[in-house]
Length: 135
Image (cartoon, helix red, strand yellow):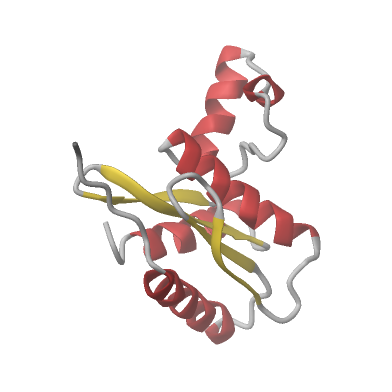
């Protein structure tokens, strides 16, 4: 038998609150998704002026990070380096864009956060800052 950790709804809300504050301070429109370790949605926010495609992109970034236990951008880079299409994962929710970051606790993935709507480097920076709240 083994023990597994998972982000709670309260934990997910802390991530949402943390990122909503940062986005609102900068007047940035973006989407933020927080998932469980399987990549299923726990919490979500879309700030004002968020580009509509960013809604699904944030969810997919978090999904990919949780499922693969690595940042979504790493999946994209590996796909390019190895000439391995992301569609070969067999799940259209996988994405290779940066901004999805797994959240770890005692070496286990307990969830993930995905940010979309800003330049990719900004999405990554924000997602990493949120993941660091629990890692």
